[in-house]
Structure formats: structure tokens, C-alpha cells
Length: 84
Image (cartoon, rainbow, N blue to C red; front, side):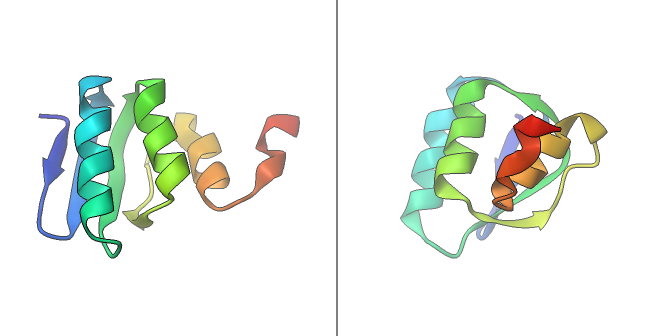
């Protein structure tokens, strides 16, 4: 399973498909203090990225993958990411 939902942290691994977006959205909205661990996330469907960008949960561990640099910047409100 690409997302392991623990009590306070959702651990996202590998590639997260569109089917994960709704469960992630619901889980994040159940409690405002919940966090995501993106350490080993490699890619995701755009719906999953939309959930992350809309909810802006606290990130316990940022992605290791350099391909996701834009996600780190967008979630930190560094809006010039598309201008680089």
C-alpha cells in the first residue's frame, strides 16, 4: 500500500495512485495535527499532489527524490518554482 496511515503520520512510499487521494484527503481532514512523511515518495497522481497542496499538512520528512523539489517549494509557499 503506497500510504500507511498511522495515528498521526501518513507514510507515503513509491508511487501513489489516484485511488489514494480521497483516503488521504479524508484522513488529513479528520484531525488538523496530522502529518505526512514523504521521504520515500517517488511520484504520485496529480490528485494526490492537489490534496497535499490544498491541505498543506505539516511534513515530518521531506522527499529524498530530487525530482520532487517543486513539491517541497510549493508546500513551503515558494511560488517562484515555475520560473526557475
